[in-house]
Amino acid sequence: MTDLPILGAALNLNSFETLRDVMLEKPRDLELQDFVDATVLNGDWASVVERAKTVLDGHEGRLGIHGPFWGFTVNTMDPDVREIVKRRLGQGLDVCEALGATHMVVHSPFSTWDYNNLDNYDGGRYRMVELCHLSMADAVKRAEDIGCELVIENIEDKDPHDRVKLADSFNSKAVAVSIDTGHAHYAHGSTGAPPVDYYVKAAGNRLRHIHLQDADGYADRHWTLGEGTIPWPSVFAALGKLDSQPRLIIELRDHSGLPASIANMKAMGLGQ
Image 1 (tube, helix red, strand yellow):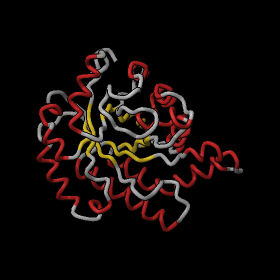
Image 2: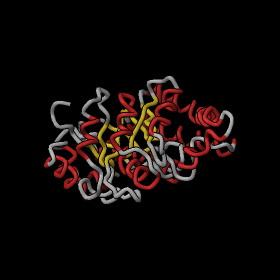
Image 3: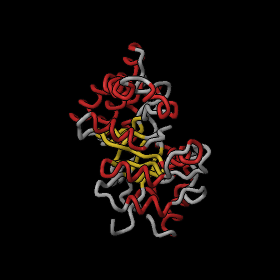
Image 4: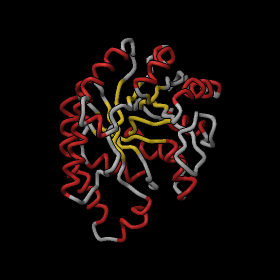
C-alpha cells in the first residue's frame, strides 16, 4: 500500500444513515450487520434489502454482510443442527445475491479447547475440517456461483494458521480468511496466542477482510480505534506488505465512534 488505506465500516442501515456523510466522502467498504439474526432471515429480509438499495444510493465501496452465527458452529457434529447451519448460510447468501454483496463473514469453529486437544485425538484435525465441509460445502458452491467470498473470521483461535489451513482445504476462490483484531488481541492477552500482526502474517495474501476494533487483551471490547492497547503501527505495517487488498472494516460496539476511529488512524499516518 502506497497511499494511506481507506477504512470502511460495519454498520446497520440506521447507523449508515446517521454516518452517511462519512461513508460517502470516500469509497469506503461497507459490511451490513442487519442480517445476522435468524428472525430477520426467517422473516421479510427482502424488504430490508430493498430499503438498503435506497439507503445505500451513492455508496461506492465494496459491499458485504456479516453472516448469521448466533447459536451454532460450522463444525457441529449433530446432523440435525447441521441442516440448520446449512440453511442459515444459504439464507445469508440469498441476501448477498439479492443485495449484490460480495463478501459474507463466517465465524471460525476453532476454540481455545481445540488448541490443546485436537492433537489429543487420532485424526482430530482431519475430523474438524471434515465437519466444516459437511456444513459449508453447499454454501461454498453457491458463493462461487454468485461471485461472493466467504471470509472465515477468528473468534477464539489461538493458532492463527489453523483457520488459513481450513480456508485452503476448500480449494475455492470463494473461501478466504478474515481477521478480527480485537479477537486476536484477546487471544494474545488472555490465552497466550501471538500478537495481532502475527495473525496478519499467518494469513498473508489469503487475507481478504479484517475487522478493525480496539481492545485491552482481556475481552471483546469493540472500542474506538486508539482507545485500547492494540499496537496499530505493527498491524498496518503487516497489512502494507499484502497484495490481496483486504476490506478494512471498522467494527465498533458504538457506531458513533467511527469518525474518531478514522481520525485517530489518520493522525497516526496509518489510514484515512
